[in-house]
Amino acid sequence: MSDSGQQLTAAGELRHLLTLEGLSRELLMQILDDAEQFLAPPTQQVVRSRVLSGLTVANLFFEPSTRTRASFELAAGRLGADVLNLDVSTSSRIKGESILDTIYTLQAMQVDSFVVRDAAAGVPQMIANAVRPGVCVLNAGEATVAHPTQGLLDALTIRRARPDLASLKICIVGDIAHSRVARSAVQALMTLGAGSIRLVAPPSLQPDAGLYPGAALYDNIEQGIAGAHIVMALRIQRERIADHDDIPDSETYAQRFGVNPHNLKGADDDVLVMHPGPMNRGVEIDGGVADGPRSLVTEQVRNGVAIRMALLERVNRTASQWRDT
Ligand code: NCD
Image 1: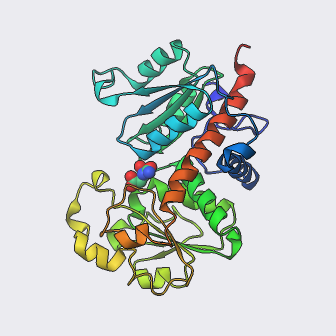
Image 2: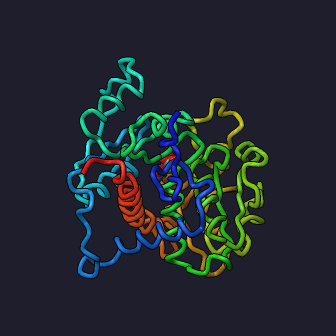
């Protein structure tokens, strides 16, 4: 195996985005700063929006997605890339072609970046190990393990709303056991120095021991949310759960773990609320809270495009050293 599957080069540059685990605070801050540039009003932006002109980005989503796929598509398009969206329902994978055959076929068509979502753990790394130097891989959601662009857009959203991360109590409520969003968000927030992180879930949806060193676990929302400045609600990942008997029914769940006005009472007076989507209104989040003045949901979506622009630009800049000019 060549070392081209490593996400960092020997010089520490980001070549693929596979996981946030192990990335430095400095690198994460640079990525957030780059994304800020793309959020500036068009008249104030440094003119660099066509940096991916002549390059091709392929979106390979082997799991359903609306916002992440749309977000990557817009990000790549706004940087001037050609974008290929592979329709998975008609793709060769269904006909028994392996993922790598699909990758080699697209690579032969001069695809420069692969954006990959898959239900199996390890797929982004496997693709990174197989592509030729000069081709980048970005993880757009990997099983329950990682969703690095989501973790970064959540960190950016929090930093923009409450820049003093070290003073923040951040509470994530929901199906922590199956959440790649929680995994990546906590990795980013810990590295960036968030004050404290609390994870709240019913006993059957608690994470495996040791997965979240440094975070406090609760099975009671009142305790977990007390004094929180940021509360992030997560959906129950029913498609990843074989035995549904242990999961509370929607009504009980909404009452005990829903981010709603009643459960938010003990939070900080200026609490802000987040959700990665797709939302189940009235279950893990109350509709009025999601649409209300404390909600950052729209900012998360907006910031997601900027984060993906920053990452596509960065990994392609690194990869350009192995490309013919
Ligand atoms: C999340 C995902 O796919 O992991 N959604 C997203 O990327 N916006 C969360 C979820 O599906 O619940």
